[in-house]
Image (cartoon, one colour):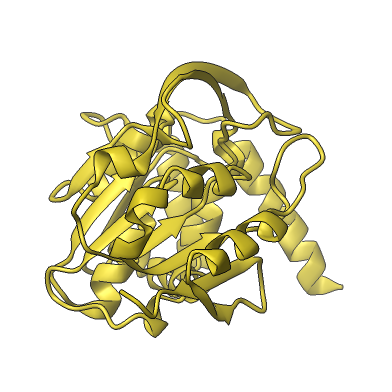
Length: 273
């Protein structure tokens, strides 16, 4: 009872201070970190970038969402990255120096930071993220890598892109909830990367996974691992996409290596790579 009450108060506190000016918000947030004995994680605001950032020892992550990311990072950046690495099976993939990681639906670039820290290798990372706010953070968090503000699908055409940044639910397919939309030109991944040997293709397309993979058909033989979120996120009915994606990849020669027990993430392996 006491814990649930404290959690409720903390939730209300965070909701209220997100409306304050950035400097006051960070000040109150860091005071909260002090009270809950998590002083190793601090929050700051960059006036130059007009973005927030969290710090924990040698780790720094830029973000814009004053509620979602604060909730994720206040318990520890390392803890957040460890959970993300587990969700996408990074510990099961033998990453080596100069391996290519292609991150489709890169959001703010957490996967790159997680993969770099876990593998301790010099990786080649290419992050694709269409949403403007997320892309700005991605381009800073993975500043020494390639970042492309492109939406990936099975064709090249102008489409609506629905934005729900606070929930990290941006999608080419109209979701149940979104704040606004923009028009973008989609592209096929196999038209962008033709001869690249890819160790890991990570996909989080918020329901558009099958279209994205159809746009990879010409390069699937060049991909060793595919880690993909197939959860209930497609469209107004919030359907999962594993029924379409699993047979598609198996027919292309991939096998299921692992399935997450916590969420609908799957790791596929190409034995003919």
